[in-house]
Image 1 (cartoon, rainbow, N blue to C red):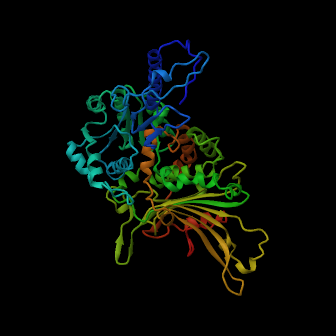
Image 2: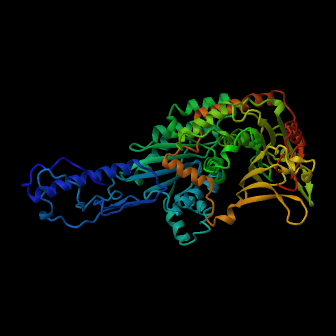
Image 3: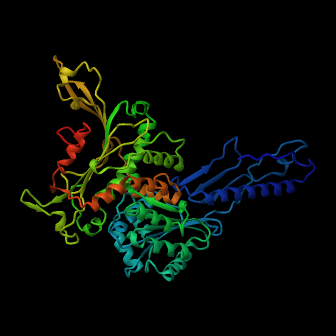
Length: 595
């Protein structure tokens, strides 16, 4: 870093005066770097260095917030400038304050998991935080607090958390040591979610750990939606950061319809600004969803094909091979459409169909997603099929019906399966059906995007293909989970003297190509929240647009008490979903011997 000044006043100035002048310059440089450090929370780059070179005399090294500098002593004889000479900062910085040790200027992050005794916290949030710590992605100074109504000590929290922590497959060194270090950063404070006093007590404990540093605070609300507002109010008014940022991660569901979602947003904004609210949809943090825009916008072969001219239909498929399993009471209040389609699948659809954003900035990407959602037709009842799984015996094992769950009413009409056809009324996608299918207790577990291209016009090899042209259609499959992969189905000649065609896959299987374990979605999203990166979080107008598509049909289903089509546990779902696809001349891509 070189700073240029006007010529030094006089060549007769003493060497000592010049040294003092240069030391003042060094102090300004240090303060500037320190200020930038305090405002930059990008902990993903766990260290950075400004290395000395022949063209850059200033030498700083920074590791996890620790600054240090070494330079040769300045000789007086080397620093007497002549008149009209331009002064550059020489390597005289010797004692830049240690940023992390200076408690007045360094920063810390306090992460409070509200609802710490729940399953989500135990199975996802704490393991994700440990993974970030293990990878060196958390800042040097951080504290994790669990907050819940359960009575628990710090030691009991650490015992509970330790049961779910694992180390990366490719980095097992010092695993036990790292776990111990992480657990020593975890603490617990019991309290009610609507108690100002309990949050004030939490605030006092956080300040003790923050030790006078610039305090940044992240609250993760892993609690039922009916107590969101109470917790946000108390956290905002009684436990906000006094000197740094305060952010709140809110888990879905974000309401049940347009009205309740808007009411929730208004309530949240009474206590928080929009840029403090991080509405999390963990599917947006999955590796293959993250890769979607890379695949499209950085590969020339795909972007020209990404339109109605070449794509016949797009399918978004979500399947689980298990039922509600203890979550029946929660699930029955929402159903599969609200639980999966209105958020996970619709968010992926928006990323898939959006126009090229101006940049990778969060607001530019979210602006394009909102445009897609606002261009879509509201979902019609005729374009929806719903189902509910029933009891089924297979292999001598009896699997329960949805209503066998003791927390579910016997006469429940809540769908555990839904299929829908949606349309985007813009120039790129006009007339292309976007089919969604989501269900529980199906024959397998998968989440994938299937892009079926149009038939080849005037295909010279039709006689070799036969009458079923769908079997010869090119298809791009992006398998989000499990066994993450991207593969393209093409037609190929079978080796031999005859002319026989075969459908083959050009396959990128992540497990075979990359040795590194794929991070969990919660790791990426937690890191983004700490960094203030909002690209993978949902903005309020985006949420409004999403609900406007599904609210009318949800109300119609409930008002008309539409009875779901029953399907056996472990089957492929209701037959009606195939009739829905056939109406738009589509065949589900996950059905058949070649998937």
